Image 1 (cartoon, each protein chain N blue to C red):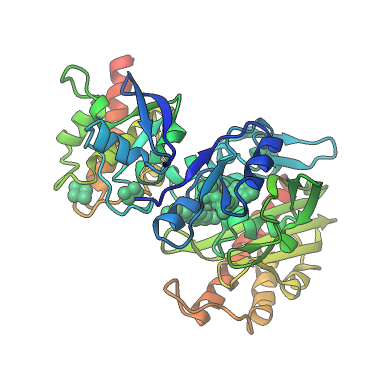
Image 2: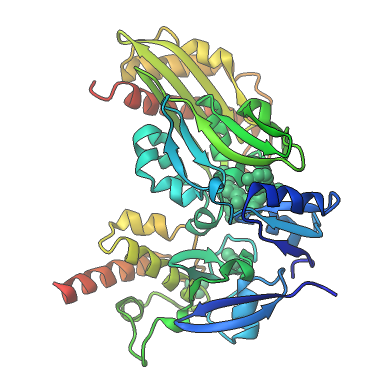
Length: 292
Length: 161
Ligand SMILES: Cc1cc2nc3c(=O)[nH]c(=O)nc-3n(C[C@@H](O)[C@@H](O)[C@H](O)COP(=O)(O)OP(=O)(O)OC[C@H]3O[C@@H](n4cnc5c(N)ncnc54)[C@H](O)[C@@H]3O)c2cc1C
Ligand code: FES
Ligand code: FES
């Protein structure tokens, strides 16, 4: 059985902050509970009060803002993202990622906000959204702020969120003209063993800028500028780009401090990263040059 | 005194008013309070799918879903599939294809596949395999289960043609 707690179901952010303040630091927010209930069951964390954020309307919904930014409410479930026509049109790599995340039950229950706030090192969205240069929006009684993903996810199960702060939305900038974002992962258990995100921009059939992120392989998702630099200048055709990605990975990933665990030995994971960067780059290229 | 919450939920079409503790899972409430023991709690960690039930048509892990979150919602369990002893085409297909041996996974498989077919009445084999990925079976090797789901889709299409 899960240890006892009381349950609060606020309908507004203001009520949620109140409920949080009333717990004297012994409360936690909960949405899908797919992470939180599990750690409580295992006795790894205890809270006197859980504050359910699902009933707060403004934390739901997916929209594209006037400047093309994709805004996903924190309480949007993985399944809603997977099946959203808006996401399919503006960030197809995310819809594809969601289809292959966890299992259908976790996708129906778990949310994008809960995923990022928990900062599990094997998060699929954190890795991909890092390549996409996404930000999270946080609200507290003091006001709102937005934070880049790499300044939000700071370590395993550790973020820059203050205890009372509520993650309200994820903001993904548009790819822009000639831009594309791709993601590839290898998994042997529930969560990815190694994951790579690539964002790139093509001008006149040449890659002019790139971002490469790595996840699951180290304790926190990270950008690898050396690998990204290796993609810049590559001709925007699949064979040239894959070759550039392979060469970039060989040097950029060589000294990577990969975690040795049940998902595989460090060497093997570095090898996988070198394969996956090619797949992610090709997926990004498909979005960047849809008519090629 | 610990907190008690009053919840109202519909289970297999029947309304229930219950006084529960917030910590009670839907699996505990369905099995221990409503005696619906078709769902099995096995891994207790959202991995195996033996506890799958539908909440407002969506498959969830009853082992790790708070019963209070089902307040005002409609829950379906394996007990609610057959009507007056008449099996659904999916249940019949599981028998015809020998899609179970020990049957510990079966109620979860049936519920996941029921939701899948309601959403996508004519799935490809690959869509069925992906959809059932989170339901584990130690006995059948999965092929007969996938065959049964596809056969149920075909039988339903034929019946409504
Ligand atoms: C079997 C299994 C397989 C999984 N596989 C994968 C996988 O392949 N890839 C992957 O990326 N993930 C995977 N997950 C992780 C999955 O649980 C998360 O992706 C899920 O989305 C978490 O969301 P939640 O709403 O359930 O979070 P909860 O459990 O409700 O919350 C998680 C944490 O975040 C906090 N929190 C939640 N929402 C907010 C908010 N809006 N503001 C502030 N704090 C908040 C909570 O206080 C808590 O500390 C898996 C989980 C399981 C159980
Ligand atoms: S018992 Fe719930 S998923 Fe295994
Ligand atoms: S029939 Fe035995 S676990 Fe599936």
